[in-house]
Length: 230
DNA sequence: GCGACAG
DNA sequence: ATCTTGTCGC
Image (cartoon, rainbow, N blue to C red):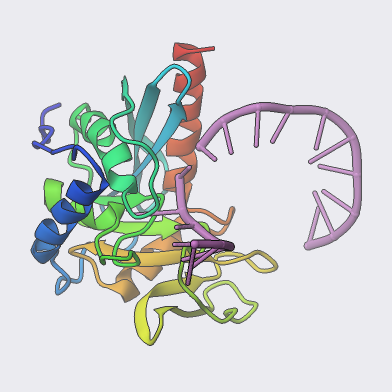
């Protein structure tokens, strides 16, 4: 916990307050930066696992070398569920424990990859945007389904993509990371442009549909959850 | 009012 | 997210 201290975060009392917090923070999102060069530096995947029965949440952060995809460092944090799952308010459920896990790292996280959305959100302020604004780190979101948005199937080849749309507005991209496999949905979080977000995603995925970063974070928080629970 | 809805 | 075995396909 040398490079990063858990920033203050607020858990809203109800859904209306949560939406208000998002409306207030969305103005701090930075969209006009390119972000880290794909394939260089570090990339950190974050993910969370739950046991709502026991009111336990485990977050994991796994740092990879962007060039070799080797794991550089891992960290986890265990907490209590702070907010129920409400579509559009996912960040309030995940962020508190994710921040603790990031704070356990001894290295700068570099680019953070979220399992979820950023700009592709009803108020244009999803998990990846929120995490970016709070930490100041470059963040992108890579989701597994189109949420409430629409898209036309991208071409069949790895790397093919199509716009993810909210009506006429482009909020992200459906990106094929493997042939014969459904696409993932990439959207901008903070300090990274969409083209670059997709380039990072392609470098991180290919062996599997999802980015290697989120796969490892997912495996780690699940394993930690069942070791902490049963 | 009804249906749909990241993880 | 989570509950859950085997099974079809690259």
